Image (tube, rainbow, N blue to C red):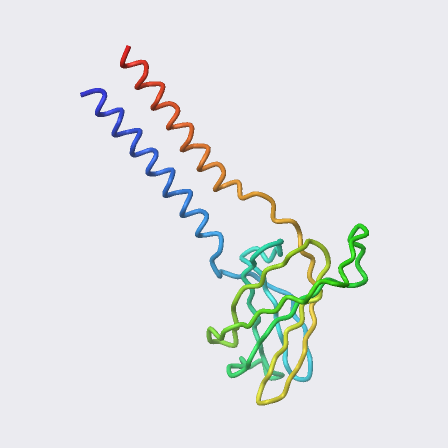
Length: 180
């Protein structure tokens, strides 16, 4: 009876750790955005926001552009595309970034003048992100300066896997001791 209880508890712990790791990893990409950077051009105000904490990292980033006109009314029927390229004036430790191609992303309207999607930055450093906005056939380019930092490891996911491995090792040790 005692062995079944221990096995059940350990199986429950492994299951819980596995699910919590997956939930934390999945929750990190939600589109709950904070406050971004605002710029204006030709009667359009644009706000560029990245991720939940507005920190831009190498790799895939959630992005949102919010558009308003001069009367602070949301711009609903726009076509929004982003293009990003390394700032040619930034010093990247002697790397030659002139040959890199711009990164592009098309954004989809989610209502209320908000256009969402994601963009994947390849290198850390200073980038120029241009929002190419077309409203009523008129194209406007709005440029934003963005600092991209290194993403680093995802410690939540790594910690979850380490926890699962530790539980498996403990289970193996308990089984081995109980067989003797």
